[in-house]
Image (tube, rainbow, N blue to C red; front, side, top):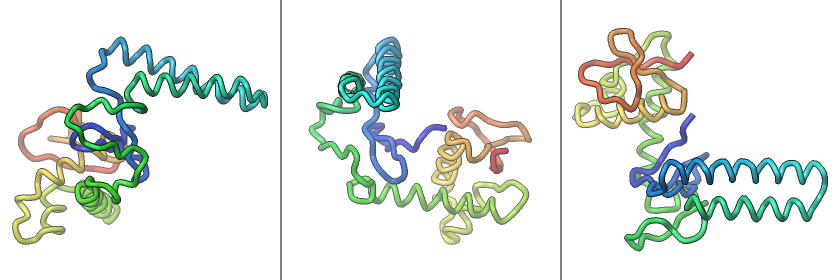
Length: 180
């Protein structure tokens, strides 16, 4: 499952908290190498804790920190526009608050409608329920919510009964069901 990502790609949102995303300018090889290093270091932290070896745990935690800095998740920010870092802050206490509330609103509405029925829903049904006047303007918000939920493994998007990749552009009517 993929976590929610801010529109600018700078943060992942986990349980309402912002966590800095890895630097997208890293090459695939760099990202893979540092991610493997990070996972090894995290396993070393766990092993040191099990062994109650505080010096090994400190070394492993330093290795975790080095890998996170190399990935851009800690240390200096990787963006260059001078925007401040909101790492580890609650989304509702940052400039992302309105965006986060809106994404939550559409996701919750979609999931609630799916909970009410055993069949699938059309994005227009969700938009009409939430915004009866001018619902068409909100169709993309519902489709975006469906894509995010599909990435997190909560729903399946279908067209003509066939599952769609949430990253692929689709034209025409779609249906949304709870993931099995």
